[in-house]
Amino acid sequence: MSTETITVKGMTCDGCVNSVTKALKGVAGVQEANVDLAGAKATVTFDASKTNVAALKEAVEEAGYDVD
Image 1 (cartoon, rainbow, N blue to C red):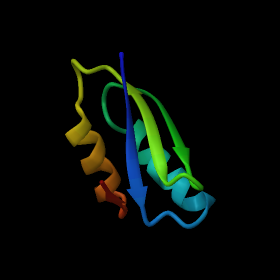
Image 2 (cartoon, helix red, strand yellow):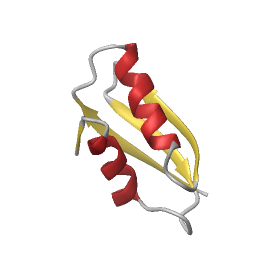
Image 3 (cartoon, one colour):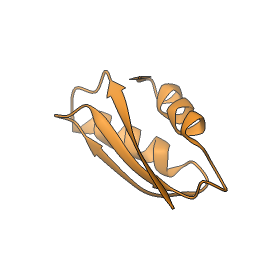
């Protein structure tokens, strides 16, 4: 398992946190997604043989948020 922290811009409330969490958990291979509203970041644990950081960032962007 790999763990990556992604900076997420544009989150303003718990609803945003839920949206980002749902988007990340919807990616095949993601085991855990912890989204921090105050820190504007998401820490994701995933199976690197099934997905990658680019796919995780794409999922967040498709949910309507910006990533670094």
